[in-house]
Amino acid sequence: MAYLNVLNSESAEILARTGDIDRRYPHNCYPAKMLSSLIRGMVELAELDPAYRDRAIRVAENAADWMLAHTIRPPSPLAGFPVTYDYHPEAADVEPTAPARISREKADVSMNIYPAEMARAYVALFDADGKAKYLEAARAVAERYLALQGEDGSWWLNQKISDGSAIGSHRVMPVQGVIPMFEDLARETGDARYRDAADRAFAYVENNPLRTWNWEGQFEDTPAAPRYQNLTKHDACSTAIYLLGRFPGDRRRLAQARELLRFAEDQFVFWEKPYTPADEPTCIPEWNRPWAGKWECPSVAEQYSCYRPIDASAAKLIQTYLALYRAEGNPLDLAKARTLGDEATRMQRGDGFFPTFWSDHPHVTRDNWVNCMLSTASALSELGDVSPPLGIGATAHVTWHEFDAREKTYEMMAAAGMDYVRSDFHFVRCRPNAPGGAWDFCLYDEAVDGARRHGIAFLPILMNPPEWGRDDFGRHEGEWEEFARETARHFKGRIPVSEVCNEPNLQSFWNNPNPENYLAALRTASRAIKAEDPSAKVMISGFAGVPLDFIERIYALGGKEFFDIMNVHPYTWPNPPTGMMEPMMAGLKDLMAR
Image 1 (cartoon, rainbow, N blue to C red):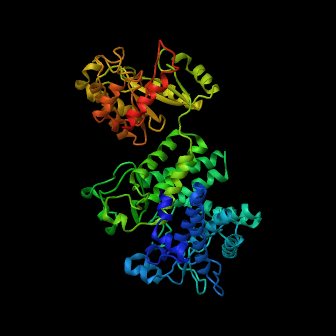
Image 2 (image 1 turned 45 degrees about the vertical axis):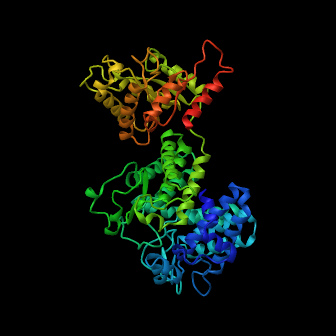
Image 3 (image 1 turned 30 degrees about the vertical axis):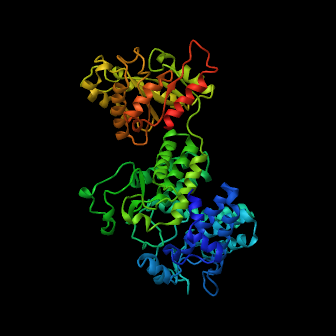
């Protein structure tokens, strides 16, 4: 939908019809950035849906041809680089602020992160249509990088087109665009010079940001800032992804990637709104303050100087979480990627449009960046290709009467290829002297960590409150809430999903079973778990059989918002499941869809 929104846009129509860019779209004043993203997005659409291939490739080719016509020419020392800025008076009429003004002021400037992005787009287009001129264009860009590469392995971030002199002292962070460009071309051509240049550039990363953690923001519309004054997570995340791809199975590199993700998550990911207008930090720039308290969450901020939730920033975290998930198989990484992906789909409009700014500020629809929308589409496409963490599991009472045999149980489950073990977390075993006693999770720590050592995820069933009775929940809601909260806090990052009680529609598990009473327990536990770990999933109790009336009543009471995963035990005894299971599950799916 997002790809089609771009393909059907007025800007794409102008490009397809005339071969010229839409000069009234303000951000086309940054052509290398915008058109490289457009080309790669259209190539991705052509691969996803052959029905749109011809139109998408035509738009991509016209964008590439426009960029080829706007390449820096000799005698400039930067000849072969596409231009970073292109002043459009028409854009100034539409948006009299940043893009037109900046492009006019920087007409003689090349920002040397963007030619590599365009070269990568040329390579992607060559792979799609086979036209040699695009591969040659990419090689021309790469040759200029080879000529300009410094002894430290990097390049001047900004240079004058007219004479090649450096503007400022900042160096290119090469891992996001330049290194991947060299590696793309090394694969396409077999030219070892590109591989060597990529290695020299990575040495710069190792000797500088990987040591200093000065992951500075490098954006065409933001002035280069002193050290540590405008950090961003983009290059840190790109470095994490690069480490995992370049050094598969290397535990030291894996640890570095995990630390880079932690840096990005700690400073830029917000699982809930960080502040309101009343308590907004004074460090937030003045121009940024109208956004206070209007953030949509979970979300990801872009950089210190634009400390606002941006869709492309969420996309970068999705891709980083997925890279770590593929490397380690930790379901929490996938859960976090899916949580941000879910928020992206909630932000998306019916016509496929993703707003750049995840906020209810009125600016969000006016100042939209197409490259960001295409980044989000690409990340969601990658997320959709990852198999969900569903696999095979079994209930085994490894926290109860089978506790002594748990290691043998885990060994057998791992040998059988199982992914999950489901077992009880009893309130009374965590706090035997309730109420007011100390919490003790030692028994369950051993069970959870033992499963993880065998590559098995642990799914706890929060159940068996003290003897105050489950039919009198209201008087003891506080104790139940504390149990759920303390459990979520203690096992944060170690358990991906928590199930709230077991078969509450049976008298044997729930005194006086009724939907209202169980919903109160579900609601309290869900809120407590999400407050401690917003990325955690809550699974509704596994109902005995498929009691549609019971479940329908929970939905009618608003229970849908308090769980992420439906859960039933579709017993058919004493009858065989053949002929019964399918209609039972069809009825449940129909109820959930209503």
